[in-house]
Image 1: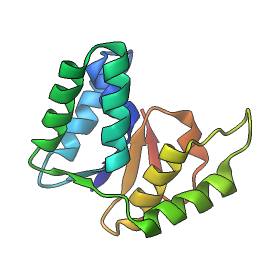
Image 2: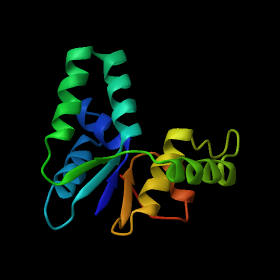
Image 3: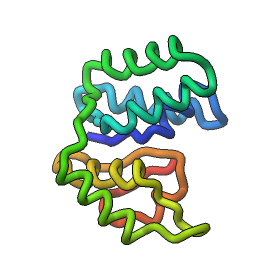
Length: 138
């Protein structure tokens, strides 16, 4: 199972330089062999950024596409995950060096807490310094 960070979805939707890598990660996650997870915070971030760059309709379509995937599950952020995320942000955040956001810390916390999760996929180099879960920076 792999965790797909917001970066993966946004890179794919906006057809950034690595959109094909993002597409491959999404396709891999949406298989019975691998499976994928996202946190509810990914849904919030993806929706917000698409709304700001495009419009509400495009954002809704993107979120519905995530929800419609057969093998990608959106998981709620529990109190335990939120607290673990706060611990991770405190451990890793260094101004102007490693600026792990609250959302990213929650994503790491969730990926590390789901036993079946093998890796967190992103394009954000801040994840390379994280020890709690294998990270694949596209």
